[in-house]
Length: 340
Ligand code: KG4
Ligand code: ZN
Image (cartoon, rainbow, N blue to C red; front, side):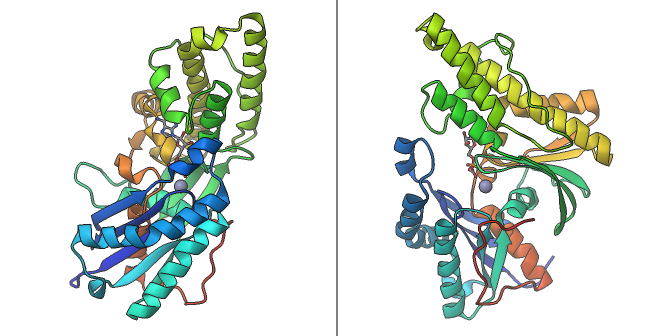
């Protein structure tokens, strides 16, 4: 335990959520997220609008994070920010804000990789949540990412599988769009899936070698299937919506679980941690839990507010890097394709 109190202010702005969080010695004091409903009308994130909304939100969001934590900016030890990966225009807002604040306060600046942060969110001190032991496998599933990462220690991670096209969240959202559901469609598909028959319709799983994923073929298969059925019965979607949702979700979960089985077989690692917005899916959570008895896994799901994009996960990485004295220079640049 550090003898000194280390306060980290963290800023996340990689996609369409403007977020700030204050952490004291590994514990979250505040976690503020401003979403951007403006994208709903477009059925997906519009980068230019996201960047503009970040500019409007960042000052009030940081201000709220500090006041909810009851921390004054003069108490801060360092500023952590998301350097990448993400949308360039969005990243630039958080990066320049963090740089100026650290410069003005004469405190260190810490750059954070968003994908590492999704994984290290499991190390936030939170009652009732166990931290996974090293090495473990992390599956990061969201609207922007789908990766399986072998995590050997905090900063020694190898990406052993990832999507070659769409992210898994996009598979949910694009299927939802075909069915006329709102954006993002993941939560609604999840809700309807509980009321439907997962085996009502069969969609072929993509064949991708090794631990990589592909979801774009599934989306096309669903589109053709729906077009064909609607031609025969114009009320098909209305009449069978719950069954369609259940079948799509069942197929997606099957793809994820198959790859995890292969990953545990290849690495011999049976501790599995998940993160990202799609880890909210009740079907995936259930399938992982069942895997404990079936395949000998131990699974870890973080607190919900730390699974979707948030700044608490940036704060924990900032804290861990602070302890190592791993700081960024003032000329650090945002990097939209930053790798783990
Ligand atoms: O992590 P996140 O908030 O943002 C990024 O994409 O980084 O994830 C959003 C994604 C969306 O694709 C949304 O449809 C999906 O997570 N999602 C879900 C559920 N809740 C959110 N997908 C399936 N089932 C859910 N319950
Ligand atoms: Zn994310």
